Amino acid sequence: MKPATAAAWKALTGAAESTRGTHLCEMFAANTQRFSSLSMRWNDWLLDYSKQRVTTDIMGRLQVLWQTADVPGWIARMRAGDAINHSEGRAALHIALRHPASKGPILHAGRDVMPAVRHELGRMRDFAAQIHGRHWRGATGEPITDVVNIGIGGSDLGPRMATQALAAFRHPELKVHYVANLDGADLATVLAGLQPRTTLFVIASKTFTTQETMQNAASARHWLVQALGEAAVARHFVAVSTNLAEVARFGIDPANAFAFWDWVGGRYSLWSTIGLPLVLAVGFDNFSRMLAGAHAMDEHFFSAPVAENLPGLLALLEIWNTNFLGADNRALLPYSQSLALLPRYLQQLEMESNGKQVDRQGLPLQCATAPVLWGEAGTNGQHAFYQLIHQGGRPIPCEFIVCKHPDFALPGHHEKLLANCFAQSEALMRGKTLAETTAELAASGMSAEQVAFLAPYRSFPGNQPSTTLLLPRLDPFNLGALLALYEHKVFVQSVIWDINPFDQWGVEYGKQLAGRLLPIIEGKAPTAGLDSSTAGLIAACKS
Ligand code: F6P
Image (cartoon, rainbow, N blue to C red; front, top):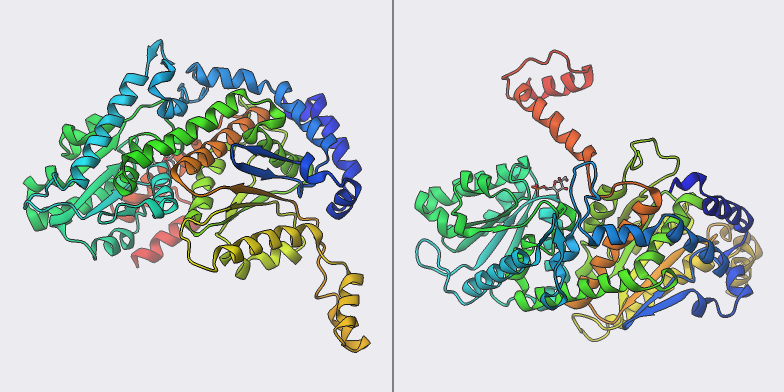
């Protein structure tokens, strides 16, 4: 589909025009059934999108895009293992990683991938059992107490976020740390608290060539070898990669290498052996429950009609906000400290996938794609940036995620957390008019002069759209389903925008230029040919 020229798209442009002046409060007043008609349940989840600036009529029109863009056809292509990542000639089969053994084969290039998937899952399970059972010993015969995952992007964000999300399920003794940044401060501060004798490194990199990861891995190796000698590497380093030849070249025993495949994109790889540090953190059974949750969401996505399809609805609501209401960002606001890293994880998933400028034919896009995604755990964000959402004058669609039951049940906390979450979505929707503020201040006993002075500062436009996703609790199953929900939402949007969500050439360009500048910074190549800013910055560092 060429979105901007499709009839359904044009009809939505018209609908946006005709509802532009209608406040959310008016929409609620006009339809007393608004919550029941603009919310849906899946299992024991509730998605409330009645505070979005849509009507049932607009939702109906948005749902036409699902058929017009042939989302069902693209789902079928994904499931069949077609090379839907066409600019890299690859399939995108992350759904296979959570496909249960009992449900038959998943084919890639005519071969069932499931035996290999199950084999690696089994190896992860056995390895975790060895570490947890203290059978795997370091070079000095001591058990492992600390695991350091070294990876970046998809080889870091997923397991790091999930390890925090499932903090309530963590192994009581084993500590799992994450290092990603090329800045030596990251590795150095983690190593400062560790003993080489009891530390295991997981080097996680799909390509095993990423500069950040290779530098951190080399420094970690040096730290270990200095303390325990070269022979210790075999007991203290394991790797996760699709590039087993590079793993061997780095000096990691092939028996300690966990494989995955080129049909797994980096930002879709949490479900693969990239999940190894998570398995070590929370145990294989919990990891399996997370896979089961993701599979349940896959099944829902594949079979539910668009009007009841959670990923489909989230995708369409954001398309409405982005392409028809002109919002260029979305705030992701989990009212869950355990989900504090979710915004960061979704930044890669959503912006690396759909931050694109050309369509599937390589032609310039006529519509906006992924909005800037940002966010922070509530209630912390309330004391930082919510002021701007309330009174800053910009459209900022907000997505609240909150659990009915807490994962850490300290008395008195959770009810307050819920109250704050729901109060924010109410305030953003409702606002407070100048007349309401004036009446409120007058009733408090202020002088008319004071009231007139203060009222403008204490009034709010409201009409800020939001969605609230209420989960029963944050456990491995629900976390898996939540992450798969966002994967599929991104996919639906890519289909409607007619873009490839599985490549990331923009990131590759930055890597290429860094490779060119390194020898110049090291003094091994001349600055000739550089622009004056880049040359000036390098000269300032060297002076
Ligand atoms: O950020 C670009 C990227 O290629 C991501 O897609 C990937 O997750 C990350 O780099 C890390 O790559 P690798 O796992 O190959 O080290």
